[in-house]
Amino acid sequence: MPHRRVVIASLLSLAIAAPALAQAPAVQQVPSPADTYAELFHQVQMRRLFPDGKTFVDATPRRPPEQILAAYRAHAAFTDAELTRFVRANFTVPEKAPAPPPSSDRTTLKAHIAALWPVLTRGPVKAVAGDSALPLDKPFVVPGGRFREMYYWDSYFTMLGLAADGRHDAVEDMVDDFGGLIDTYGHIPNGTRSYYLSRSQPPFFFAMVGLTDKADKARFKRRVDQMRREHAFWMDGETTVKPGQAWRRVVALPDGSILNRYADDRSTPRDESYREDVLTAREVADRPAGDVFRDLRSGAESGWDFSSRWMADGRTLKTIQTTAILPVDLNALLYGLESAIAEGCADLADRPCVDDFTSRAKARKAAMDAYLWDASRGLYLDYQWRQGARLDHPSAATLYPLFVGAASADQAKAVAVQTRALLLAPGGLRTTVVTTGQQWDTPNGWAPLQWVAVSGLRRYGEEDLARDIGRRWLATVEREYRASGKMLEKYDVEEAKAGGGGEYPLQDGFGWTNGVTRELLELYPAQP
Image 1: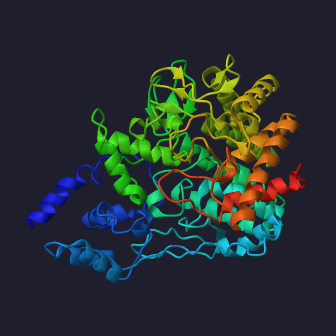
Image 2 (image 1 turned 45 degrees about the vertical axis):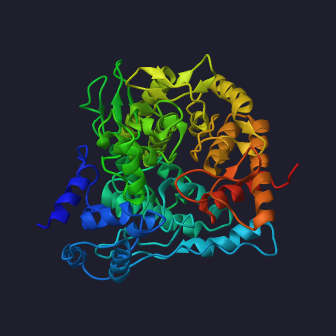
Image 3 (image 1 turned 180 degrees about the vertical axis):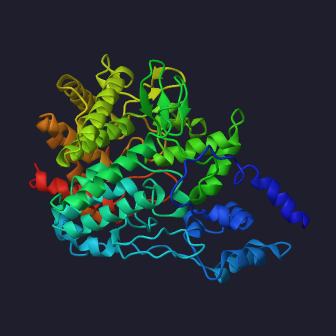
């Protein structure tokens, strides 16, 4: 073996070769680009041949991957220019996605959103050897920009707008695609790429099913069965994990209660943010690199990548501790999943299932009340299970128990009071109350959090606050639309303008903003 490859192998020991936590078997395992292209992948990402780390992992090979790797290894060394030429000769590299055309005539928001659905719709996907794209049988809607594939939690909020525009066919197709992912891989991955398979995202599949037609009993039963299988994925290890310990996404608390955490199954750098993760891990002297990588990946599983919620010091990414946290939003969504399964099983006259999942939801609510509810603050707060303490990091996640109906009337009223005091900004709902430069912190506001808040508050009769949040958000989106003709991924809700921060430039398109805005326009058509 040439000396160059020995050196590279040493470099890879920090990253690619970091051991993974035991993975539950899936129906189908697919290697990621890092697995497939090994040291070639490492060099392309670490040399930053492409400004966006997602570019190479989305490239399609022009010949069998083993031939590409053999050709790479046959060379003693590559300059950056030579390596770029090699990659472009052997891969079809995705160019920067064209932005959806801005509205030049500034038609109504409703009309503009309706016109964007065809622009963001993609056809079925077939598997290609060495390509990271996962096959899908039905058409689907992408977020837009660098996000070329279907994403898990994004899609629920996108579907809200599709349904409001009468595109029920598109909703059904996407739910079928997500169900197919559960059937194939045992869970819904973060997005439909092989490099996302080791993690999921906030489990909104039950809410997607809630948007569909339930008249076809065979199809509805299949979807309830898929919800049960997704639940089993999140609860893997619940019967064997001991109090005070964790296994995958399950944590057993000292009193025997079970709650969940985000926990990617791999402890390597994210393929799509490889260089960034390697550099972050190098800044951490007191933890194994694999632990840092897993916490970064788990932050991505949360959908809040990244936020002060996951940082031990509440400020800096190198203190990330995602796997040590029991998040309010995740556990609320799993309560929603358990409740939806019980309801679905009741419709299907499956009494043992109803009893099982009703009991599970009841136990989860009790554990949430014991560990996540802070009566003195009037907030649901994340819990650091290793330290045995709630984290004083108020965030929009506090509204998730209202969204799924897990809060009592008194809890909902207290959350509403604190939401108005802490989280209501001039342009909508704040994400957190601290500024860190991370995109899931203030001043940014995000479409999905606006909808969770509005929907949850309305569920408990807090109509005035729900309307206030919804109308402020609509005014922010309208203002930016009038200025640029664009629908953006996120917004600065302090100044009602385009958002910022994060690992990549601001994206426009944008699936979940379109969906939530379209649904809010149904609720609040007239601006104050």
